Image 1: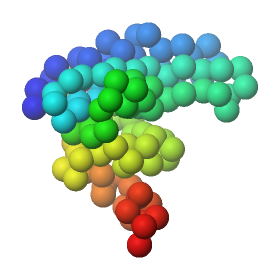
Image 2 (image 1 turned 135 degrees about the horizontal axis):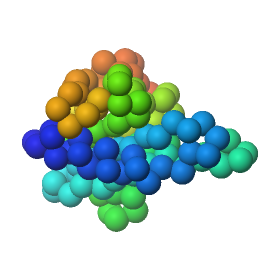
Image 3 (image 1 turned 90 degrees about the vertical axis):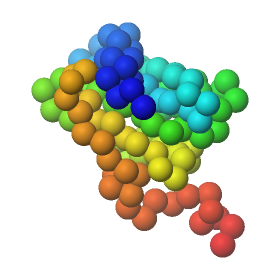
Length: 132
């Protein structure tokens, strides 16, 4: 996997963020099982509850195009530190993640760390739990 390309896609998506309230831009890029890349940015709303995170924007774009499995996701927020996904985004990532998903927390094109699903959401509640 080309981590640098994926990081750059997330950084580019970050520039489209609509953040008039928090001023905190976030970008994300997901890779589906067939290698397609979908990007997203955070989009705020005056009601706050209608705000959508970059990770969910990218995942929902992929799902709306027929993809159901995400192999990797790159996330970039504050470019001086690694930005982790919020709790809701972690749950959405878990819903569509392959077993070996790579979560890439990006500072810039050359600086990132890679986490597993278990590392960012241990004991995740999944659809398999519904049918036990």
